[in-house]
Image (cartoon, rainbow, N blue to C red; front, side, top):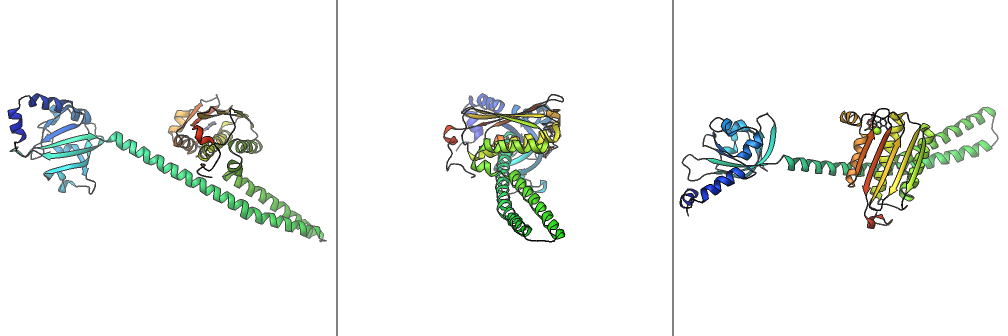
Amino acid sequence: MSTWREELGTSHEMIPLLQSIFANVSDAILVVDRGGQIVKVNAALEQMTGWTEEELVGRKHICELCLGMATCLEETTCADCFFKQVQLPSFEMRLRTRDGREYPVAASSARLPDDGNGKLVLVIRDMSAQQRAEKERYQHKLTNYVIQAQEEERKRIARELHDGVGQALYSILVGLNVVGQSSLSDPIRQHVNDLLQMTSKAMEEVKRMALELRPSALDDLGLLPALRSLMKRVEKSFGIQVELHAQGERRRYPAATETALYRIVQEAMTNTAKYAQASQLGIVFEDREKEIVVTIVDDGVGFDVDQTLHTGKGLGVFGMRERAQLLGGTLDIRSAPGEGTTVIVRIPIQKEETEHGDSRPDR
Ligand SMILES: Nc1ncnc2c1ncn2[C@@H]1O[C@H](COP(=O)(O)OP(=O)(O)OP(=O)(O)O)[C@@H](O)[C@H]1O
Ligand SMILES: [Mg+2]
């Protein structure tokens, strides 16, 4: 079998071809001598690291560019560097750039067998985009899982409150009514009346908590009836006038879509109540066949969206955006100090998904 040197010697046309490949491939190529001194680099490596060929060749050692190496099995230390091995088909490397950044790369190495100097060739591929995409995919998956678990837990607690504590309080109320109807001394009657009032208040409170956790209307009647009852509660609690306009077909949507839209509107309304000092809040619901668009507008004090959200103060807007994105949708916030706030959420829907039936996953 001929060596690569013999091949090149016999086929002179290979030399310009190899030179062109070396110069033009998008993977970075780095050749080091037995001692680890850099002897050759291609343009892709210059671009990736920010160092020029002149700054590297004959001047830098491989270790000056390496912040660590790992295979899928182990991470190496400098004392036990993979570099000393003859050949490593693939490994990960953290490359140090000229401006001190760390660059995650995938690399492979090969010792040139018939080279008296024992040169080692490293082929390096930029992995930062893949790593970013993978991290984002993982984060989305995790958020989806957390949101679903949270929704399930809210459903469970709401049901327990309604069926457990709520029913117990109702029984106490009925019992106290019976006691109240018997002949009692004035102080005892007063005491029973106080207990009746306290029990009804506690029942109201339990009902409110269960509704806030997860309104049964959302599962039983759908998004618009649930939003209407949410509006009434906001009007009553915060004294803001709320109007809802619904355009397009009125039907049931996939449970995940109804839940996400309900939670997004709920958070937007809570933000208006908490921060906007608004007197009016409008919700426009549009069923555009292939997507649902919900717009929530308040006439409050407004805020600087970029500046406020970059400080990472709250989780509300982040959660709204995540919920929309997990369903392939978008969330847009338009606001400025003194100009009120508009939240626009778009969620795509498939025609076959819109039927109200067993296909509803989280019912
Ligand atoms: N409708 C609004 N009017 C005025 N300011 C708003 C409005 N909505 C949001 N903001 C501003 O944006 C910030 C971020 O809102 P976000 O919902 O993310 O967090 P939060 O409400 O402060 O906390 P959390 O929602 O986690 O309880 C708020 O603190 C507030 O300053
Ligand atoms: Mg909030």
